[in-house]
Length: 275
Image (tube, rainbow, N blue to C red; front, side, top):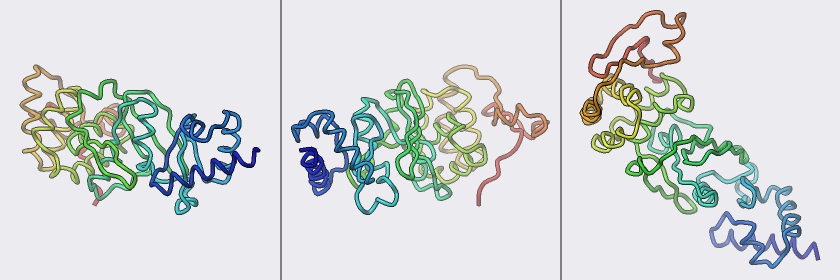
């Protein structure tokens, strides 16, 4: 009987794959197969030990097609959308991963970075690491979230404008000042000035100031002009350091090398772009 239940789950998985589906929930499988919870877990565990199945979240399963057996999992883009729907968590793929998807030529990101309104721990799936960054209200940046087709459906991704703001908001995820500037040099021509200005209203003023300075410095002043007008309309804003971490290390950058009066940004070191 146990063998039959294991075979039934294996057939169920193969049938889903034949239809182009790579995810399912425990509840769906149990309902379809008519098996008890314990029997299902036993059968699923056997497939997981054979590396034909993985469970990034309790009750949620990802099928590993044969071509990805050596990787231990299909790409996260195959299952991130249904996973986040299962978690009931609004999300978008962002930061350096979004920059890579938009053609940032210097990016080969090891992490699959996701911004969501639910606090979630990182997930290891085969060779991939999914990391989650928290933003309380995703509705405020919905204009900058776009749908992108994947091999198995679609996923939500930040636009170049939203990506530019985010990499300044989450510096710990963006690889430091030099990497941020390099990414912006790749994305600059794809940034929509009107969208950037609108989205910037939902970001803290220091983030807008730092991004504006970098876009001007990189030669994308036209992209930043609307954002500057929006910032100015929000009232007074204080001077900020371009890189807070470096500014706090007197041995690294003892004196400022420049002051940007337009954005009120103190520069202790100009970024070095990755050629």
